[in-house]
Picture 1 (cartoon, rainbow, N blue to C red):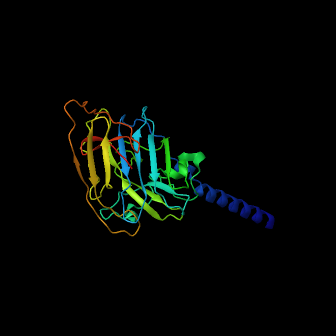
Picture 2: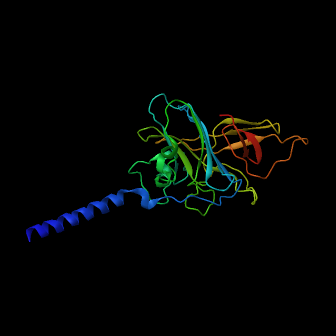
Length: 275
């Protein structure tokens, strides 16, 4: 009888251990690959200038040519000489009007995967949707650039993995938030009209000169923001631009892929971002 009770106890404990291990495994919350993203849909986040901070850069995102996943193009500079490896993520909320990065909430995680255990780049479907650096690499150094297609992000507004109305945040290794920016809609797809382009409500674009080498027009976007954790600045962007000459080529309505330094629509004008 004693040995039978011991066997039963061992079996129960073994089953409990297996159940616990399974609950800690993110495979149950795998993100599905996204297909059918509207061709030409594109979004851009430009990190704002801030007094005392040299962090600059942009993250552009556009539908893959076949509609499967999203092409991200990242260009960052002016990062601290210490504090790495640095991380960046899409967060679940936009940057609030005061520019405080803590207001962006947690990572975009529609499938409730959580942050533990850490993301395994070899199993991207098991990572949080917004954990871009977890999937494609943390980094050291004062500058960083990368381009990749994330199969688990979406440019379809009704998809849980949609990020176009959210934000991106840059972190130190200890998770301190050092810069953040909202995504701005550049184009919603080749089969739909392009909406007016403006900064996200209540948040400013950085002070930077933008110039279009093709159309020969220029614009200056000005504004202030408080991207760092604990900052309380707020600002509103303004932009002025000279119209293109009559001989300039007509603006295309198809969504263009964007790089830092690639063409983007600002205030209805195609421009080049110089960051």
